[in-house]
Length: 120
Image 1 (cartoon, one colour):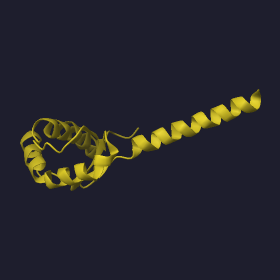
Image 2: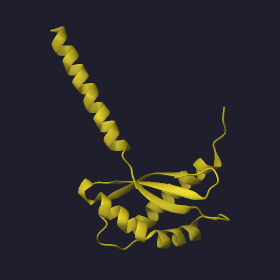
Image 3: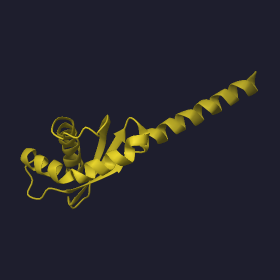
């Protein structure tokens, strides 16, 4: 069994802390309801890709723009909370896995309905 990788542990910790920082410390009224779904840290711990899901899809681009402009502040707050020699650079991306999962669910339901209609 493979051990729990350090980059994965750091990603999980950073996800919790970044979510808290965005929720409590980033005071931008343009930010709507968003969720930090995951943080993937590269093996060399230099880059952290932060995946964000926004409730209103029309606001996704503006939300990512706001977060990217505030990443210096978020990183400085993160430095106070996480003790690391070198803190990864933050990059914000849209998380499309929720939409992908919903699409798969829709396809499975459609297949099930077609199977039931053929069986009758």
